[in-house]
Length: 117
Ligand SMILES: [Cu+2]
Image (cartoon, rainbow, N blue to C red; front, side, top):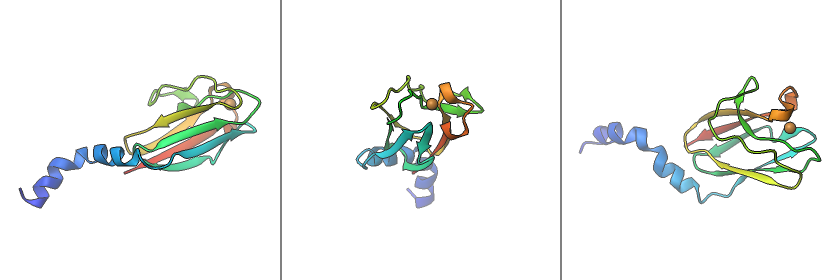
């Protein structure tokens, strides 16, 4: 098989092995504190684990979407109480805005995950 044929055939599937490899990378951590996601924007590899840890007195959610609408790109976290965490892996490259449902009108309660191969 010629190289260009291989690229044409395999191109759309490349994120699967890449995502499998990224499963062994260390998790990327986001802290929720003072009604804010820190860091607000994170960059991860496809399949890499993301852990949001709430260290705030108030419970928060990690909900996919923008303009305060849950777009369902992942099943929203439940309310995460103080001291608890929410873990997620995204296998497709892309830009994923998210927000906290109970505090959707607070600017600091919005974040972004950027996923690359
Ligand atoms: Cu919140």
